[in-house]
Length: 347
Image (cartoon, rainbow, N blue to C red; front, side, top):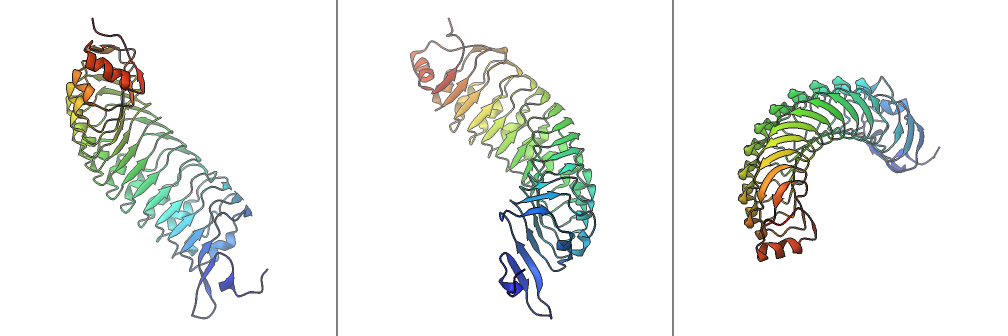
């Protein structure tokens, strides 16, 4: 209701020239806005950026009219109180590069039409009530860098087509109800740096192909139903700092090849069915800070004396068949660990 020129309005950037001024950017995040998302916004045909995050917008987004925003590059709607599904019409935003929609209140299915957004670089839809399968069409987003679908109610299998996201650096699918195996095609994501699949119902083996992810530094596969051996190929991940495999059904020995992970800071493998001795090669993990191999009854024998080379703040190995060497230096090392919980001393 202002009489000032539109170019002076708070949060409104215009494109001058060519007759009437055209809105180019709308920056109205965190402004305590309330009510429904106005369909009239879809008439801003020259808009490149719409930032409406952090408000109290309610109701459903318009179903139709998204094709009227052919120049839109950034759509930020996160932290609102919207309801209903993501409109399939958003798949017509042919120049969209980022869609930020976490904690918006979205529910229902992820529309497969989003796979048409060939320029999309960021897709953040986590912390909603989205359900159903992950559309395999998302594998068409060859420019995508970040895919964040965690903390929803997604079900079904991880599409093998996601292995075609050749530019992807982060994949976050944790805290859903996904089932089936981890696709071996994820090993083709050559630029991937973070892979978080924990707290699902994934089953089957850990693909050896994950050992091809040379840039990976963060890998969480814990709290699933994964089985089989820990692939020795994971020892090739020279940039890995966090490896979480706990609370699965993994079996077999701890691969000595993991001793080659020179950047590793955290290794959690508690709550599995691992067997055999602890490889002395783990004593070569000079950066390791936290180690947990507890609740693996099949692990047996003395802890390797080489572990005392590590400067750990956390070390848990209770509920195993392991024992601690009686060597004075080793016992002093155990006593120096701030958070230590283990088993008996070897006879």
